[in-house]
Length: 134
Image (cartoon, rainbow, N blue to C red; front, side, top):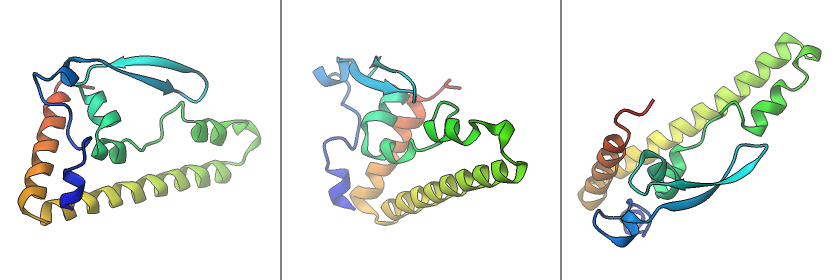
């Protein structure tokens, strides 16, 4: 667990560094179109997109996700049971990801020492950067 916290992208860039002041340019794909977006390196979006733990936590189904779009494509020709089965499958997948993330965080917290401190700092930073987010 200590190896994870020593990786360069575990935390966001430290305040006052050149990296912390430089916007991050990323390619964003909504399933239909791709475009370049600039992300403030000290934002909730940066926590999600560039930190190692953020990449674990970002997994979800959004309305523009291709899997969601395909699930409901031609819904008029699908049975209610078929659509409910697809929705249940997506829910099961998300529950599995959430449970795995919980286990990851709990393992890192229970490891104690530097690992626990790093997770608490990461979580605090993520929460502070998301104050006021909807």
